[in-house]
Length: 512
Image (cartoon, rainbow, N blue to C red; front, side):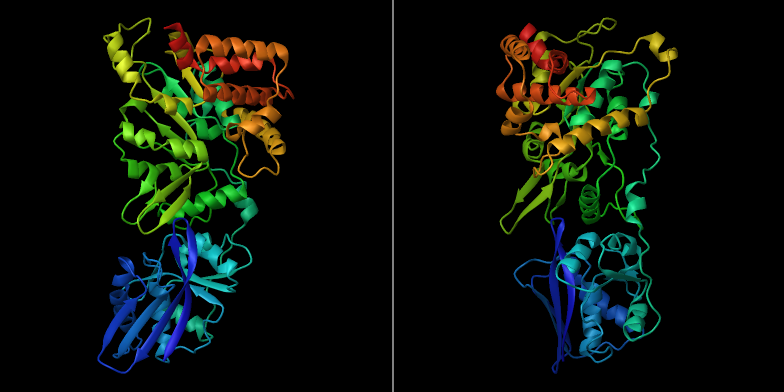
């Protein structure tokens, strides 16, 4: 007898429907899985056979063939365990043939018949809705995540026996209780706050500009100046995730297996801080079974690279595509995957190997050649893609022990949100452009028109600093963001002057 169960498999961060076809025929007992099964899918036949026997069902001792269609795409993961088990029960007559009509099934099975969570269940729920499935059956720990998708009946079960009892008209399975509106406005209590940082008014202002316009930022300063402390507080001033952003971020973390158990949705912007020993595959994604890298896990949030010159050159160079396009394309012989990777890059570095070049209180032990070689570890094209370069001086003692109360992250975030609202209205209807940092050359001509005095100031800055075309565009984008923070409709000279101050490395090269 032949049974067909609808399921899904994940490719990249998207899921595609898979028809699990189970045929039981006469012949010597065997269990064959075809349709390019890989890894955990191949091992699933051992889990399924043991689970059926231990859960009190009859495992058919006949010739069993399981086909996973479409057969030309490799399937990986353990989510096909449950549909294979149910297909065996239907094909052997232990479940009614029409019990799973218009139903998609996904889940891993333990040897005792218990159901365990799988990765990428949100993507599978979206796939189920897109193909018109009326119902989705998932393991109980995945229930909240799948319940985010509206217009789909989602049921969760703890064991295979519970699923079978439900399909035969028994007790109903739990359904999710997910309040999307409440989740979207729920913000986790931040462990850090801008109010913790004493002094550093210029650096805080630069981070505010970066958050308001989605600009990448590089902090340069001596050890102990507070670069890392400042960067870790950048996510606390970013506005909350919109629903589409939250769904995409949740899908990435779910596929990577990094979504906490029972969590329905990512509601805060991610902050990723990989160590400088990270490989290019760890940063950008990939592997024998491709998975999202750090740049994709930081999608919608902040990627922090501390001690930037300590990262290997080939690792840093792979950042060019995500910084420019907001996505990562992994091309392999068998397939090509694209992961979203739109984030704010926050990086920190010392001015020289010892860290005290130009410091008024600590002597520098590095020669000019050492300083030049150290800074050359970060290529010019990569630096050009970082909008803001800012020197972070050491905090004076009087600022550490006294002074007025500092602004909280909530206060700064309110200003950032107002600037983001201006940008949202400005770019309404433009696909892929949500912040000033994402403006194209055509957008710059439209939205960054400047008066004659401002144009004269910019011409002088380009000539004296030797700015590249990309750096010139960066200055215009930053000036537009500064104007948005001021609530100004046009870019004024003070906005451009502030933007030029955020190109510290260009100013140093001009001075040299």
